[in-house]
Image (cartoon, rainbow, N blue to C red):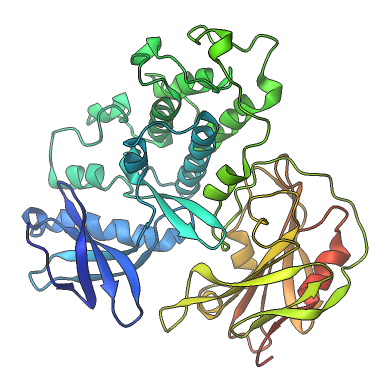
Length: 469
């Protein structure tokens, strides 16, 4: 296969991967100095109108989802020979398949990763999308301002294209594909993805030397209740599985909690007690940072925190943190780090400005004991949604939301939702508002200090400024 010099305005650097239906290239934009992944429909399918439409459907779907847990689409185009292509965000951290090729992950890290994968699939399920091909090759990693993000890629494209082309051969990856996907007349729904999640769990947490199927041995450090969750997820009958990824993730979280362990937490197939370890109650800070989300999305809040009450507002420090037109008054003892807002691009193609403000900005995303906030400025978001709509796009499925609150601070009308969470930081606050000229959206995600109530949040919002207002 020869490497094209250019695809559209992107200079091609190298091949990233090739499959039956598409080829993926690493492209570079010399003007914006940025890299992208470019997926091109395979030549042998380019003249099948149904297949072409399915290919473009995936790009449209990814564009509509526009979620930090799912690979994003920047645009689509067509080669001179008529083949369509999609320009995607490049996952610079490679795939789970690449990482597993170097050896198994530590059990605690693998368990945290499985939860992150399930959270990404849950995003699809909440939008009534079934992936249908969850494999290590379709789980990608991308670096971000607050740590590494786990991304879901390739939304069952091969399965959809096979159906569109009239192929009778099964589509999917053996070992991860649900049994009903072998039957062209069977219903494929969210429970098929639950099967794929369960198989990923077996791959991540099973002992590779222990044998497949029911004789699988579990790696040291796997909590006692986790195998039963994976067995239910991989049940032959869809009706016996969890209904969707959210339910699977909730069951996995309960099984991994210390409360799920009994007096004797050995599995029947476990090695002797002297060879076993247990998952710590709190994942290491390194693991939490590794699987954190970039600033625009929900944090990977998986650790236990202290309860929050209600205190007065923060005392304004003399300094302000700044990033482009954005600035924030710093509460006493807090510092600011300027960054780009992952996933939010301005008209110049560059990331829009953002700030992390915290007692320790470097530790904020990974350490639940460090209070702080992510503050972003986006003209592109203001053109596509309202403040209410932007906050609604950022639910925390594991948390309980208080009623929506509105407050006017420093000329900005803020929409604020406070979440009480059962694990990790006990309180999360999401807030958004439009600048006075309504030409940009301001977004703040706050993890308040212990005792940081409404007054603290409002004082922080009052210190947010955009130049020109």
